[in-house]
Image 1 (tube, rainbow, N blue to C red):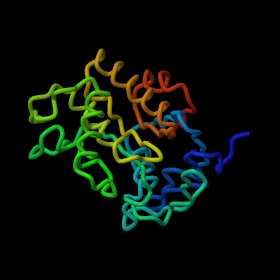
Image 2 (tube, rainbow, N blue to C red):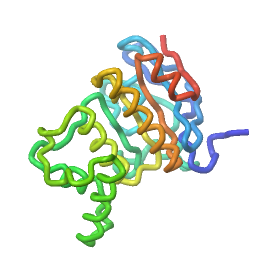
Image 3 (cartoon, rainbow, N blue to C red):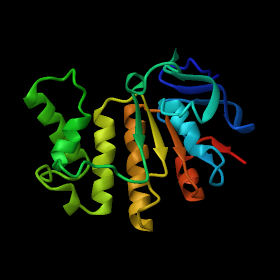
Length: 218
């Protein structure tokens, strides 16, 4: 039986998020095993993005009141700073740095403890190859298509060696064909790396493709 100390799992335990007197999320318990994708669905304002912010450590506690715990690989990270949680994020916008080349964006994701320049470069080039973008390293991100930019954003997040991955509707701005192929790539990369994934979406097709637990917020 899966529990919140399952090796590699992302677990939420008794998570409650309030805005004013209203509980957007009330005592949510959820365990996402490595490689699985859990989906959160609900109308705008229901607390979907607030939940991701709480898990990642970015929730504005001056606006929201939150209780509960976030565990990664059995360790409670609720009070840890965002950068110490090692939780990767993908958003609707790719958020590539316009002043950096494609490979420069990828190098930004490589952990600082990998100091050797050649090793860092090799990791970035390997990520480009994995994304089907070998030879694109010197390109300006502005010259890439939407699908290519999305793949670079994914690989940058994965290069940071996350222990879990959060998806805030990262497929929503892609056309139907690109959406399906990029979604499949994200889920496959998560499975290969054994990453638990928590996804927010409005699209039932995303939830169906994920194949995991669906949490519906009112």
